Length: 130
Image 1 (tube, one colour):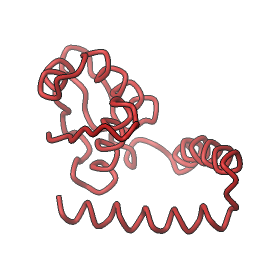
Image 2 (image 1 turned 135 degrees about the vertical axis):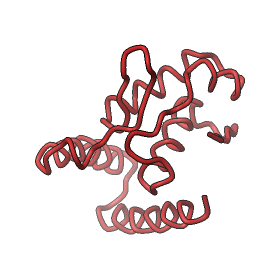
Image 3 (image 1 turned 180 degrees about the vertical axis):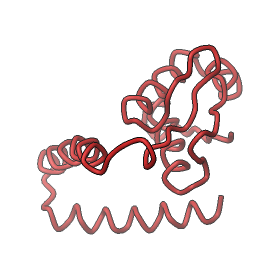
């Protein structure tokens, strides 16, 4: 798995989370696919293993991956295992954070919707290229 880190001020664990999340959302990673072992990915990226562990924990909290004892970390099977109501509740937490942050930064809802549409298009294009 290739992950590109840059020094644009975004924390390294967040860059890992964003790139893995993007691959899951765009179909680059499918339900049941195994993620690299934390230590292996940390060595590849030349980062502290705790950084990768934090990224994987964040993805697990989001319900995108699941740890299986002694075997590793795998992409979760969201659609098959979770109800629409459960997935909606998961999304609402993120929407709440987005609304709070956008208000804090002085954006109106229309601005946020426009940015969401742009990001959706970019993520779709990134998924088609990978």
